[in-house]
Image 1 (cartoon, helix red, strand yellow):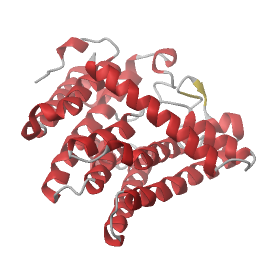
Image 2 (cartoon, rainbow, N blue to C red):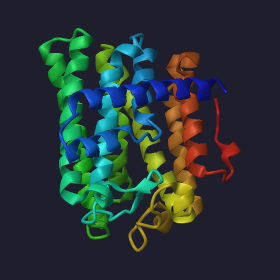
Image 3 (cartoon, rainbow, N blue to C red):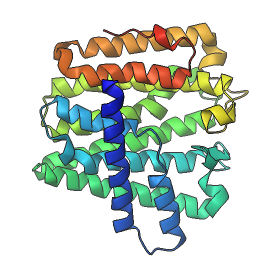
Image 4 (tube, rainbow, N blue to C red):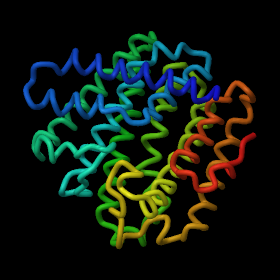
Length: 302
């Protein structure tokens, strides 16, 4: 109950800030405004943005001062979804229960909208560094983190599109580290830098985020394999015929990988004790939300 109340409050705050920022920066630009506002304000779980704010809080910073960076994370995520859904990528028809952007606005406007969201995200990351009082070198590191993440996701996406051609070389776990875990690690890496954390602390939180990011993707594979489009609120079985966690490891093997990753993530948080309660409870939330009632009570809590 405590986690859900805290999470919902932060999600609402991030929703409101995302909408306000986009209306301020991207109003009166024709169809591009429509694409950007729809993608950035459509909602979603806001997991990555909340993760950034709570990482800052854990490290003794003011989470409210990191809202611009949190919204930037959401804009990068939204941009990746716009591109991922395109006919030349996954050719998806449904996202968050609604028609995908390219079906509403067309491919060209959707691609340009993704670029617009990415540029807005980079601008907000710079502003967040200024707000935090960071120097030029530290702000440059924030941008390096973001660009590195974008590059990693791009590599993961091209590998994903070429499955199984490149899978034999790179492996499924590496694909998930690039395609999904990078966008979970970026929030804690930005949050750590905004809070002026030590390199050791940054690495520890990075490991936590990498673990939950890969686990999230494996659980998404399980959901994609078993759920209907209505249950998932997006197209399912898009990886049919391509290697994924279920086809490679089976249901039980995929579940075992998830449990190992989430247990490792919990272990990473141990030095913070009860101060890390939100990040610890987030692990259980991810399991239950992705698992859709399939033995959701089995996830470990420590």
